Image (cartoon, rainbow, N blue to C red; front, side, top):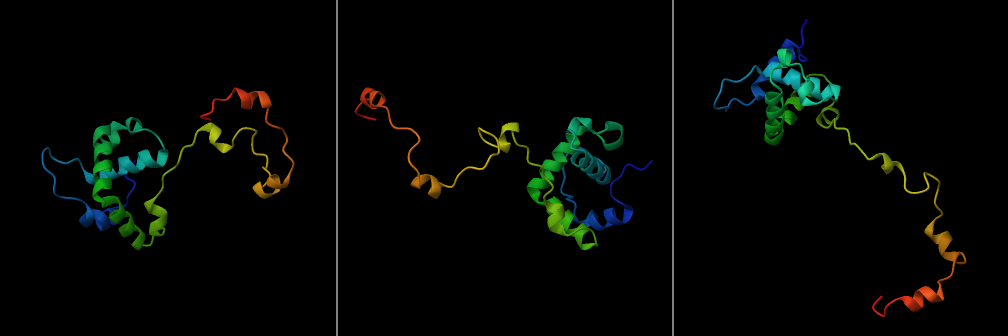
Length: 141
């Protein structure tokens, strides 16, 4: 079974855009690492959940993703693939999901509609200030 996310034609098209200025250890196969990165991003899992025997070490996947993002390599790769007849480049460039706290859906009281400020300003006050509370306040308030 083939675990690569890119076809031979797609990988040949993006190969000239991959960085070649590396030092140190011999580089892990780019196609394998790109497939691992796509697997993690598409599945929504953690880097540690990528199968090591298929895509290589999780640290390699993460480091390559972060370094190439800082260099702008991903934008060039997405634009190259988009020009090859895939989805338009704006669709490919940003595929993040924003997580919100469970309470972010609405404030206190749920999602009921609030009266407009103009209408509320013309109404009589619902409560009056307490003379005791205002007398107890310090002069600096």
